[in-house]
Length: 296
Length: 280
Image (cartoon, rainbow over all chains, first blue to last red; front, side, top):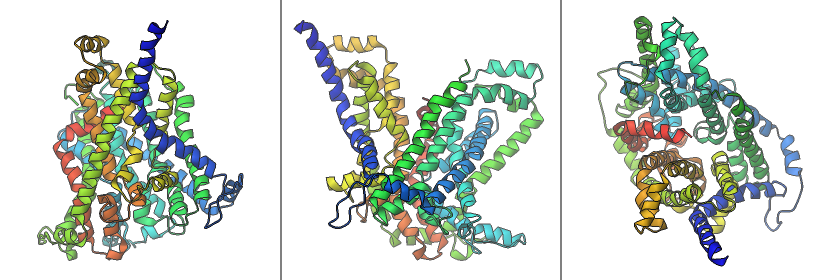
């Protein structure tokens, strides 16, 4: 009995030893902080000699009454909805072009993909100048055409749209890659009969390509949605959430509450909401959408 | 990316094919316009920042001024050290963990794997406050190790390599063991070489991610000796510098240049790596 068990136990020990270093780090910086955030969100922020004490859902109650929180949630939704469809549509268009036989494809690929390689903070600096009132490129062009300029990033009406346009530019080329990978797996044999029977390009796209690309679209959609909640570099560099919180996003608000006001308890409650939003996005993929789009 | 691949609808008709080409090129030109513009502003004197005359005098002045106005050399060193350290540790840890998941059956394997996958959805980027407190307890605030530590156990890497290791034929594994290779010897001689393209893919994705990462390093660092390029650039370009656009564009280009040049040189590898990393 013993002789038969021993190798198995050794096998198990080996497996756990292999796993241990990565598991420790994952636990320390993903699972522990997730649970700690949950715990902290039920406590007050320690101040001076006053330690944190249990306050139940008080942080969440405060959050429900916090107009900035609701503004951040609303902005994040607008930002995600404004970024996702155009960047995905552009990505698909780029991929269809790249998959064809256009002249100069290496150049096209480099041009489309380039913004992906740039740091968001560098992109923000370049675009900051486009949006600068009067002196900036956008206003100069408008002036030359005889229109009046405006303070693009300083105006509640336009600030979020400006960030959305910039993000579409930054991300479309990245998503193109996934469509391109998927398109290359679609057999030629599908296109030929369609062409032979005189199917229009639009028909072929709508009835053959697009359904086949659905899993990719979903994958891109989930990633883009996660990015919309995860990336706030450009907010730090361009608007700091302003004017008047018109461009504040949830993670940026967490950053401000946590590191400007040092209100860790409230920041924890906000983080719980952010994590819940990310979980909904990811789980939605598994439980709802995944089932409906598998074409076999 | 082979040219022979598919007959795309783009070449079903030559007239629409030509329209496609024109549209694709227009979009490409529009897409690189911001970068071209940044380059224009960086290599011309300030008065030509928005005056596009082909005869405008060229200058390298913006770059030399930017280089001396901020410790860019130090920032570059910091970024290179940080990125290298993160990647080195990631590769080691991820290889071991992926091997365990791919080739061992142990109690709790599925549960552990599910726990690993949690990180794909809740990245360290999001848990900034608690991770900062953890680093504080470890005494790692304002250190390069502190920037890198939360990312070193990469769920993404484990996932990617596990998939690859699973495709390695068992016979190769057994042959190596019969030849007298130990556990780590087999991993090193059989699995790692076979997974090389995946390592390249993961490496490129990881390097570009951490080269460009900003918010977390901004929170963790507060001195010149630890700040990576992105944070240094942000401080350099902060509005207090005034509206010297050529200077800011020069600084921006300098901090993006290493990655952009690497991308232009290894374009195919970059694109294919991101592709490989995306197919799950």
